[in-house]
Image (cartoon, rainbow, N blue to C red; front, side, top):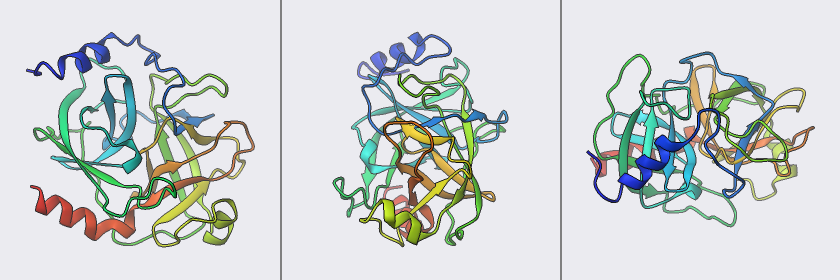
Length: 255
């Protein structure tokens, strides 16, 4: 049973009309433009983090007690929804989270070390629709085919969430080409990716969404395009393989 502080979050979540989270252009960050609906159940580790104002960010379940997302999404409290491709689904699991662990070297101005762990107040119930994803210790190379998924806007000019989880195929771009667009990019800790035709992209509002490459979690959406008009520049991601030790140690220290 939700306590008094969480009741407004649950009421807001359940009041969203199907097909829209009622989310206007109040939040900043990335959304997927010109994607296609993900195959049903294809991303069972993906979660949505809600606050009083609606969906704040996406994330991934890396343990039954832990969600991995990006640090610039930090809030004191969330309702974490999992187990559904729909942004609004009365059958989905929803778990309170009030503890977050931001990377100690996170620099918001430069968007470096943009990573955070969120601890659930109770363990997720794993099933065919709710699964954890492993944290890789090895990094994929440029040219690797990947998929980015999210509940972000499917329109260019009006930021409004889609009800269905959307996917876009992308490929990892070389560090040299990425750095032309973001000179502050740290090679070890960041990567960028884009679709071959540059006609779909993460854009405004979908931070924390996973970049899955050949079955491996390689990135979380950190910095994308704005304004959201094709042809798109590559989207920048936190490079998960570089944080394997920090993630493992943080979870152990706070279990």
